[in-house]
Amino acid sequence: MNLKQNKETDLKSVISTYVTSGCHLSIGGFTINRNPMAAVYEIIRQKIQGLHIYAHSNGQGVDELIGGGCVSSIEIAYAGSGKFASTCIRFKKAVQENFIKIEDYSNYQMTLRFLAGSMGVPFLPTRSSLGSDIIKIWGFSPEMRKENSKFPNDKLKVMDNPFDNWCDTQKVVVVPAINPDVTILHVQEADLRGNCRIQGLSFADVEQAKSAKHLIITCEKLYKGDELKIDSDRTQIPFIHVDAVVHAPWGAYPTACYNYYDYDPRYLKDYATAAKDDGLYNDYLKKFVYDLNDHNALLKVVGDERLNTIKADPRTGYAANLDRR
Image 1 (tube, rainbow, N blue to C red):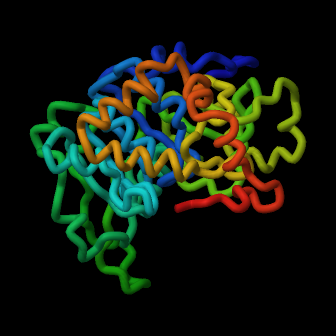
Image 2 (image 1 turned 45 degrees about the vertical axis):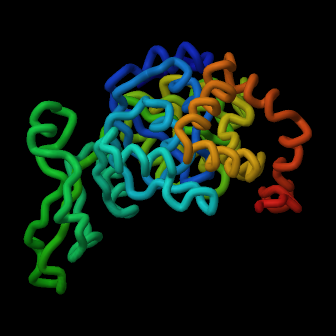
């Protein structure tokens, strides 16, 4: 627990401190919404490898980490970037060519796994996936599980319901808790101590935050005073969970950040084209990641004119009249 009054830091140093090769990392967001992209690009830029990733239903962040050669294994419910890639492209290629190991769960099961981790219990029960191949097909071998103490012995277990005398459920699935070494989230508002507010849908981010051994926050707006003490019930993630806070405006770009900006359809479309070809993808990484010093440099490459087209309408929280084709 980090109780420091001021946890503000810079992205380069916090990534090099907490995200080490081989660590178990969770990233927040959902498909092309509020992915911590500034942090993702910094991980790729620092060439951190061998990561074991946990994600609920992520898209752009997961795909770029895999495309950047940072990931060796992943546990996830769904990897897709909306209409731009119904299944993430570099993710799909890596799985098909056995570059990474994958184990899949239902959306609800991944939420329960993070919730169990946040509660400090070893597992939680559900009926989700009963009768499905999620129970039958495992991505990680017994040998892989034995070699790494961070993996549970089994993907999941089906057990008799001990309270079946008063309900009609005979069997339940129990799923193991997740306690990542590090979770990284992008939020709309935070303060120096690490109190955080998410506007709009929170997805599984709150559970991911509370289940982690270390939590890194990037944010659109960083308050220097006690502003978040007002209406404190809106603060979903209290400071006790947070290790570091980075002020990173546009830190979810090119994914959306509700009430601040929409996703960039042009960037995501161009990315999907590049991701389908190894040569084009290497060129993409060079231009948009390796040749740039930080996320601000990426924003300058994109340009203010284009960024202005995706700024959120204050009435709806989304960009008005955005050509999403």
